[in-house]
Amino acid sequence: MMAVVTGGAGFIGSNLVAKLLREGIDVAVIDDFSTGSEEVARVLKERGATILRGPSSIISDLTPVDVVFHLGIPSSSPMYRENPGLLSGVVRDSVAVMEYARKTGAKVVYASTSSIYNGNEPPFTEDMEVIPTDFYTEGRYWLERLARVYYDLYGVESVGLRLFSVYGPNERSKGRYANVASQMVWAALEGKPFVIYGDGSQTRDFIYVSDAVNAFILAYESSIKCGIYNVGTGKETSFNELASLIKKLGLDLRVEYRENPIKNYVQRTLADTTKAERELGFRYSVELVEGLRRIMDAYTKEELVLAYD
Image (cartoon, rainbow, N blue to C red; front, side):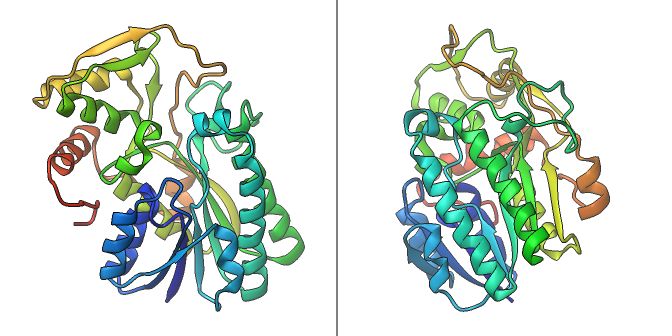
């Protein structure tokens, strides 16, 4: 089996590549290193991955593979607020991926987001009406619709995963765009206060990165021709509860509260994973307390740690 992972030097992508390599799969990584890590790319290359520098659109130059895992899309709403022009890259790169799949017969598994449910009442199901509320969710929803069109017109097989709040090791390269769980741990380790916007009652459905990676692999292995699936745990945790857990695990975390300046802020996320369980066989395995222990351990080590190390 041969796979391409766009965004493979990034957080979720690198953990996916590490898993594929462990399974003996030939992997080519495409990354423009806008948020991907040079150090991660070096480690993945040492483990056997081919590293290609550039936007996801360079996939058109590659020989055929079995599957494209398309994660090479900026994955944080603030990135798009600061630079709406990122949407043009989403369009260019995603069309290139779908065209490559059309010409080669590769299956595409791509990352979407739970943020597109904003405005709906949780728990979120895949059949809910989706109304994008910002540039980020517009880009992801557009990708979902593009995938549907390519299936309807050309039979290109694809599975989109609406990822909930993915956390885990190797998020450093994302900096202030990283998951709140990682950022809280970093703040505690560095002796800095962590700022929570609002009163801390906002919730997220936190899912450990190895469980998210498993969903990508199950999506490829499934017989699904074209579909959308939630990837979460079905449990929600408030920011206040998250901070309390981190303190109970032994870190000295100081929290400051400030007025929330973000328009269309996502107040709650909670996945209904019934469809993914039924059709993909997906179930999460890492509880939040255990996941926090793992990232605390990973971020206190000097060497790079991936979820499968």
